[in-house]
Structure formats: structure tokens, C-alpha cells
Image (cartoon, rainbow, N blue to C red; front, top):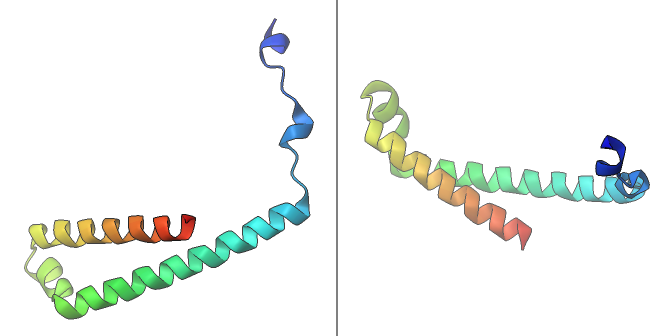
Length: 84
């Protein structure tokens, strides 16, 4: 009974290494590009706002939420740009 319900076609799950390696290398390249853009965006924000002083010394929770929201927005934009 269980074998008829879970009747998988196992050869369909096997991926050739050439195709997997090509996709893996492309993915790693896009991850690196995304991290670089993310770091540049954080660097620009840290030049505009004194993030370290406000969050660490003054415990400004509101600025932390705003910076986090900006970073999530930038991450979504980068992900959409990479995905195409």
C-alpha cells in the first residue's frame, strides 16, 4: 500500500554533474555579486546615518528597524534583479 502511494520515479531525481556544476557556479557568482551590492548599500547608508553610534551607544531601536527595513528592501531588489 505504502509503496504504491510513494511510487517515485527515482531516475528523474538524478542530475548529471555537468549540469549541476554549471548551475552551481552561476549561482555562486550571483551570490557574490549580490553580497557586494549589499555591502556597498550598507556602506552608503552608514555614511549617511551614524548607524553604529545611534544603535550601539544610544540604543535607538527605531533607527535599527528603519535600517533593517531598508536592508530587506535592498535584498528583495537584488534578488529580483538576479532572478531576472
